[in-house]
Amino acid sequence: MATPASPHTSQPRTASRSGIGFGQLGRGEKIITTLLLTLWLLSILGTLWAVPQRATVAEAEAAITGHRVTSTTRQQEQPDGVLGQLLGTSFQGGTDASSDTGEYLEWTDALHRHHWIPLAEVAPVAAKHADPDISYGEPRPTGLELAYLQFSEHRDPMHNTYVTWEYLPAMALGVMEFGLVIAGAARRGTRWFWFWILLMPGLPLDAGLLAYVWAEILGRGPVRVRRLSGYDGFLFCLLVKIVVEMGLVAGQALI
Image (tube, rainbow, N blue to C red):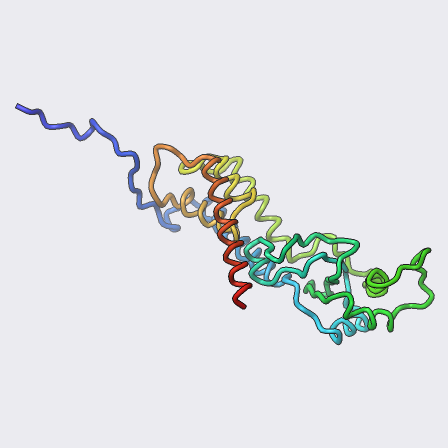
């Protein structure tokens, strides 16, 4: 006669768990979760605020005459638009690193809005308002370099732009995400998994934070016998980056 199997003789590889609601979290967990989500939202809004806007020659001249220029940089490539900034990737054939030989001028105004224009377009305006008593050294620069220097001389020295407020939420969020990797819960993914998902390189729109809150704080999704590893996190971030860049390139080609 066969003996019925005990319900404890086999264990499934995964088990479903409904998780808990926000209201069931402890007081400290509620505060931390609210702060994380608030900083995440503010960082998105700060990124949108700081997206470089294409300026006209008239707007560039108004920035000069109105003393609205607080910082200037030169770019090798046309600055990213909204999608490129939000998704954290550049799909226009190069990096956005500042350069002494860039053909694009980007400046920040007193409200910390960012604007850009090809240097060749703004050269006549910059020369028109340049101070004839200012010397740019010997040999005297010419062409786009001179236009950049003539535009930059109108920067307002009263504004300190080393750390601008639009980036402060993202900086604070990065510090807190580092804290989550070091000391936060790591039940469904190892700390190395969350290192890749949250910090290096992370996911577009900082979606890794939402994944962490969903999986580790609210405890939703399957509870795995084998936690997701750093290798899993690295491959997932790489795959997402490839898919996003291919999608952006395809979208740009269709426009």
